[in-house]
Length: 102
Image (cartoon, rainbow, N blue to C red; front, side):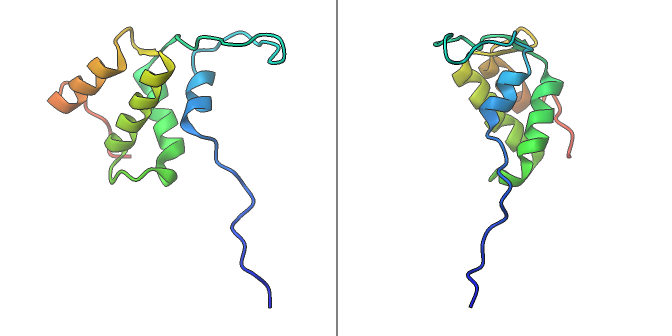
């Protein structure tokens, strides 16, 4: 009898995908520590990350996944189009920013 195994591929978490977005310079991870990932990223990049994370998200719609990614961006210290992630989240909730269905 063979034990069923999950697929071997590992999907990346949200934070490494967001950290790649601000196009930071390459660094030596052994020597350079406590780096700040406080770059500015666009809302389109956030939506792209949300699409990649869609399968692992608990949200029903892409909008909910985008909100999850905004929370991650906030914890990293990123800004979205020059706004704080909290402000961007509020604009989505107020309907000022419309997130596509998929």
